[in-house]
Image (cartoon, rainbow, N blue to C red; front, top):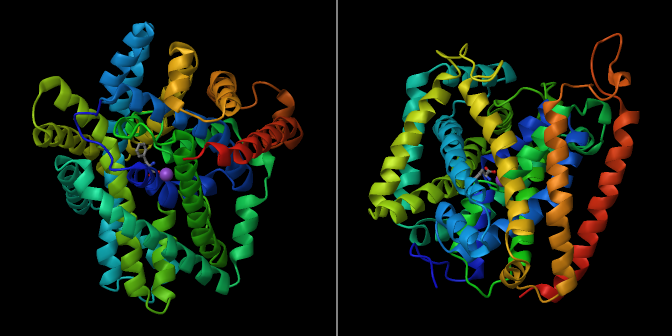
Length: 498
Ligand code: PHE
Ligand code: NA
């Protein structure tokens, strides 16, 4: 009754592994920079709503599917589909997920490579007493140098494959349990440093004052997409990890723990980065370089910054590492099952393919910066956009619909194993209706051109979109729903845990 790939020793190792998967570059690098790009508070609020209304219910579903399927996501889907006598179309969840894993890891590894290179830069004192402009130039210099980028990208892929080859149990579990708390502490130290310079409040206002006039349709789509990306949802990573989960562990309480920790780390990262942005008159919308310019600059001015800076980027690289492992695991497990070859062979082959795909991202910042896959987007940006904002939400939508309508009710009920039937039904209803409708609305809305619903949204003078009076009622409704939902679950959680 166990997966052939192994099993977590207990419920805590599942939490650890899933947290390791969730907490990564998405929290520390991507969340702050997209929050900056999409204007702050309103974006953060929509993102938090997406976590509560979509991310958490889907995560519970995805873990349950993995635990019931007990194989790689592709084969778990096969098994679940035949158990439920459902249509073959559902198997798309497994295949599309594996493809998303390839695409995500190809650019994820390049960004993780930036972090690795910054460990060296910080440790050797590159940023001692540089000003903001020099910190920016340093980052530009790195991006302009494909050879160096390739070396770090290659190193990171080797590290990732190296762990997955030995099986997930031995490699990462113990390391993560030490390093994640350390990362946490370091973020708090950075926030303390930002606060001591007196600019924490402008960061708080930026992140939590919701100005809905800045909320474009694309912003809402990106917020939804990021809620999937950050929780590692919709592509099979969490399904694969769920397949190694013990039968008696409570899915709901573990999912709440993982989602809570992930959200906390993202908010902490924002509070560490934005005070520096505002203290130094930087642009919050600086893009992917935000963390790599602001933080080294701060470390350069901080006592002991050379040491703490290097340590910080080591921890970022570790967070990325434990996420990368979960990105490559679904495809690896499938190749092992399908071709009956060793894990080492399977993972190495996949690693090489992803490594090659990553070359497109390496070159996106220099030689191929003019080559656009999606309109106006380099390969790097296109892979990021297609996976996070389209493939993962689509995968999540299908997961919600499969557990809600494809699977038999009593199978879902048994797998969730909740003590409280009322609570199960609440989740079930949310998953069947609220979650899919929310995803569908954001999708349809996001694909329509800005301002197509209401011409009043168009500002005649600037030609820009955005009108708080139009968006406000929708979001107040959403917030009320979200709060009610969280409150109900929080109240009933005690009864169901363990
Ligand atoms: N959740 C990871 C992060 O936030 C990224 C990731 C996405 C990992 C999808 C696995 C699957 O960095
Ligand atoms: Na995350």
